[in-house]
Length: 434
Image (tube, rainbow, N blue to C red; front, side, top):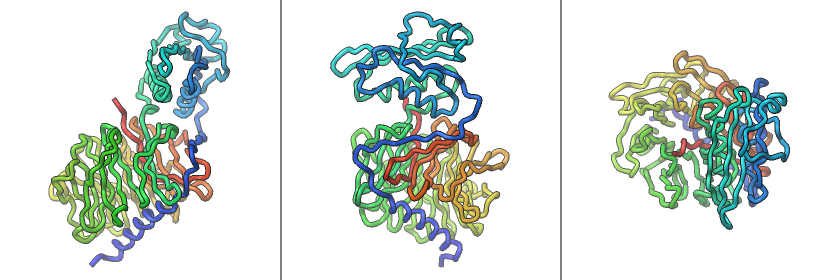
């Protein structure tokens, strides 16, 4: 018989799941609005000039690049006007230095056909009076946002030496009238596309490591079933439709397996399953609830939520199961902890803790065990690391509506991504795309 603690955890999980059902409708053609707060004072001054002949484009690549750099929390754009330079000649380094710029971005657009454009950009280091190179991108009108994100990522790499995440994608769930929509968007929340629409709830999206598939849980069969959805074709398979609940899919780093939670034998336990639905293997065998599995970046361990010690906490075990290495408790700072997510470098653990009735996003240094709150929210959910490990995406509540929020791992830069009049949840940040 399930003990009272297990019942408490199950009720908590059901409350979180039921809260997904309270999503509001999405207005037609609504776009994400972004509010950036808390950026640091020591921002890198950069001048992003209006791209020459950009008026030929249906979408401004200059504006998207400027917005991306602002959202990074690292840059301050000192040129917000419409002046343009093509980059064909070396800039006046002394003049730009006098204006306070450390770097300069210039570009141009050449129309090659009714729907084709050549976009050229160049980056200059003003302090060193030298060119840092650039990119030449051929783009259709439909892919201009992707081209702009690629340029912003290149700027991040050249100036900061780290890979940018503007070309990655997000997934999240919206309820549109009486229908639930799993949507895919750019990393800035724009360019929303439907991946799946259903009259029944959709929860827990999880990206495959190659960014080509999303696993999720759908209730269209009047019970939770795990599906794997191929984004390019729309083809999908029912990965797990066992008796009882099928929930919490999480991909292994090599994309060959998923860790899932099943209640087919009674209390919810963790299993692994091949990506084609074969090879189901039970990994935990406790008499309490084990759920929310997440692979470590090296694929050797699985982090998960369990109430085996009383209240829910986060544990780690071998990816081959507890029979190889038993579950070891990881979280100790708070009394009620769920939703483990591991940073891509394996150094940090993001999670949700209930502190005084407030569900709040925390981050832990796994080497030291030190943790800190990354938000001051009271109803945070579903954390997800960016591919470069620098930001955590999650769902929270502003006023009476749920929104998406992103925060840097140091807590200095915070962003709210919202759709006016709508309610969005269950975010998942996609991987780098080669």
